Image (cartoon, rainbow over all chains, first blue to last red; front, side, top):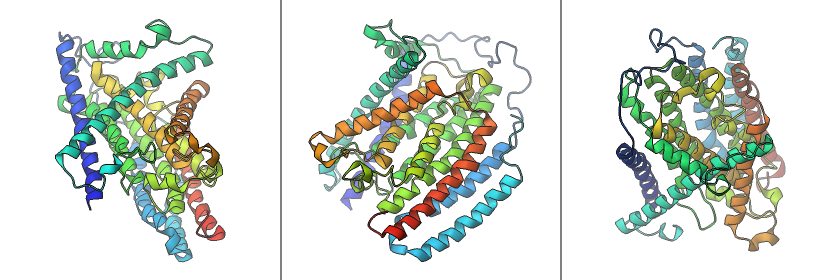
Length: 123
Length: 339
């Protein structure tokens, strides 16, 4: 019990230090750096031109498709890991079950492939 | 740190852990400083230049000077930016990159946290950095930053799948995700290291890791010629420095992980060489991987984005899945002991 408690205390210590470090450094930076804001400095950068229109432009719907694919396969990996760790005790039957499971997902991958989800024709 | 593991939790121990964590932070910052110097030098030599050689002896203080400059630089936040998220993004990128260092075992007796979830802890935390990148791109309210952030997110999530799957084979052989146990499993001669039985997994891991790091030839999110600088184009001063710091801390983390998972961690290549301390072997393998990353940057041109996405889903993912089943068959064939 103590063993695990100590491990997570260490992780917590890293978390606290990880949050404190940027805050402290940025505060120190505030004392050192100049601050003379003006309207020109604060305009949005667009290669030297005046910014045109809204910046939150439309972007390719493909990004969502990738996110969908990611969700499917990331859940698969979450399922794969417990299986992999216990594999030597589970034996052949578990292997065939996993073949079926991954096979089903591969059908999904093939479908996306055939539907040209992975073909990128514009930005 | 090992000797405290079985003690009850006290504030005194927490204080010691804090000192250890500060030491890790210091080591990592020194690593980042000199990794940047080393990278510029190596690429300079490969391109028949000298690299930085003006600031300090042999240019050794170049990065220090760069960081000092960033610290003194005015911090402009665009008027149109979403201020709260804009400030949050670099911090959110940095925190997980530092947290993953808590579990890395450098030697048999040199490790901080010994988590049984090990590798999954790394995967779970490094995913948070992707959110920070999208956040930075979105909150800048800039077209380049938005596109850079979206590209970066798409690339990182695409390559995370093969990266995570390429390690499943090791989990099967070791029957553990604990990084320490994975290294102990690889004891003996160098052919006991995981990179030989897991050669397919190793190849997938290396390619996916380079892409996760957003390094050439997969550095599309930062494609200077197309997107200016990608998601951090509006950042200046130390907030920008935190994005760069995060990137190099991940170089450190990935090089450590590759050493631990595939190259035997602190184990010597032959049992006879055990008299050299494990930390030396670890550092040696680590340095080779870091050099390899810089070498690739000087050698290969950048991919196009369609090629990049195609590679992740059409090549690396099927290969990673194939590797899992090859490992399973191997374990069945050669018995539960080997594999």
